[in-house]
Structure formats: C-alpha cells, structure tokens
Image (cartoon, rainbow, N blue to C red):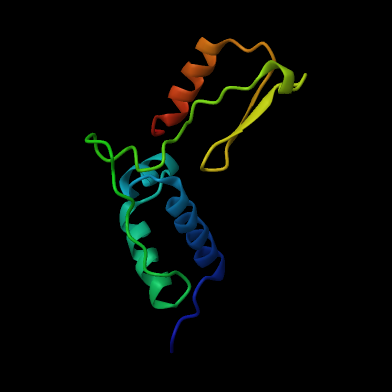
Amino acid sequence: MATQPDLRKQQRWLEQLRRWQGSGLTVRAYCLRHQLSEASFYAWKRTLQQRGLLPNISAPRSSSGRDGAVGQTPLFLAVAVPAANASKTGLDLVLPDGLTVRVATGFDTATLRQLLALLREPTC
C-alpha cells in the first residue's frame, strides 16, 4: 500500500527551495541561516523534482571563498535616498528572505550597519 505524500510538508519545502533559488546563497549557507538540515534539503529537492513540481536547478555560483556564504547576488546593496524623496516615516528594507527592517527617519547609520551584520550571521 503506497503512502500518501504529506502535502503540507511538500508545500513547505517547495517554498523553501524557491526562496533558496532567489537568495543567491549556497545550500549550506541557506540551510544554516534557516536552521534546515542539508540532507533534508537535498532529499526534498530530489523528491519535488521527481514529482515534476520543481524544475532541475543548480546551486548558485559562489563569489566567496569562505564556505560559500555569499552567492552571486549580494545580500545588501548600498542605497542612497535623496532627502526630497525621503518619507517622514523612514523606509522599509525588504531582505531576500522576506524579512523587513523598518528604518525611521534620522536613524543612526552605525547601528543600522551593526544590525545588518547581525542579520547576515547564521543563527545558532
């Protein structure tokens, strides 16, 4: 008797794999950042491809020598907001993984740099 696939798990992994594709991160870096098992990542990637739900995809090329933590697409880009276009409420930074950082007008640039550096680090 064949077992039915867990559709919630399937959808969760399909979303993770699509996010990884757009992240520019290596599998290792993405899994570390999102606390995922690399073995599960690769197993679900293969399963979803076999089910025809995910096209054959390959890892993004790494431009960093340190464990492939940085892919082709930079995680953060420098942005200059002209004062005339700046909103009174500040701005929102939307990161590749969907996390949004709301920055108030008159923010401290050193603190923002520290926050962004912390967000780049893999979680424990």
